[in-house]
Length: 95
Image (cartoon, rainbow, N blue to C red; front, side, top):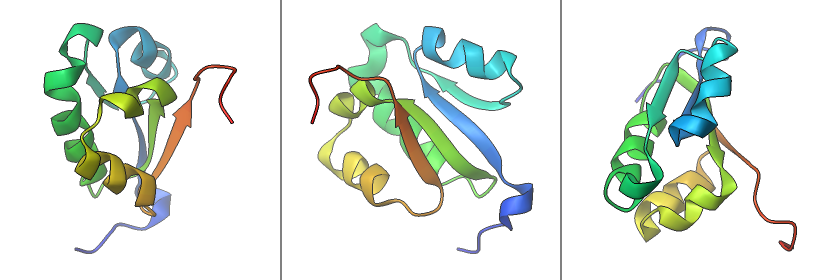
């Protein structure tokens, strides 16, 4: 699979509507809203779809959402070079 040049790639955000709204207001056009009560069933598919999108160069997620991913999708996220996956937030007791 050939990737587009980074100059034409977009930022995407995946997570709860509360998490994605600020990014959308800032101009992020690619997003997947997954309400908290649907994460167990829907988050894997949403993340897999975004990280395989050739138009996406950076994926933003909340750190806590990694816990909801299956082992395979989490491994894909953690080892992804392109797109780069950036996680934000999380507890203060993390090492």
